[in-house]
Length: 187
Image (tube, rainbow, N blue to C red; front, side, top):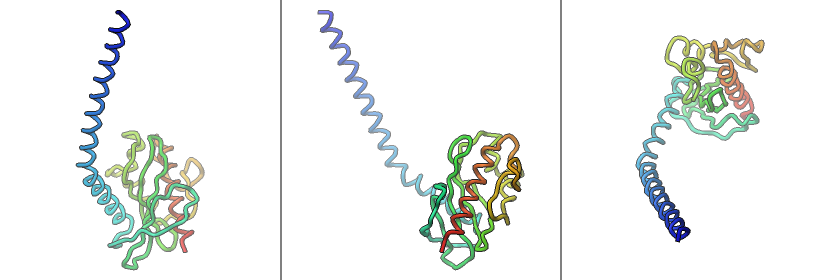
């Protein structure tokens, strides 16, 4: 008799957990269905703002095909208006995870600007790269006008790394280098 009650108890608990899991999964699916369009629109707006930052006056853009040997470039945009340059979305890996950023590259191969769209870097250290304060803007602005193969000053390069965030700084430099190389390979 003891075995029968134990088996019944385990089945009852298992079915209860299955029911709870099913209800929670259905609720999550409903929330996803309600919010996926809003999230997609918010992400598109972030991308539009980032393109406007790195390619001022570009207006409407079109996505173009590209060749990327680094695996960091996810999209390349060209202005429809004939304005000079490209906006290149790159996703390098920083200290805390992926850093999604937009890099503006002029037709001369030099960086026009960078904009960090999203990141998971450490607050107060790597997150400074995306901050809207003087330190963040100074870090991002130093890339303007640079071209060729870049590296941080700790590696003998010309980019001043963020204090305490060398891995993040190197990741952003890697992303910029991938964008420059991608645009140089465009026909």
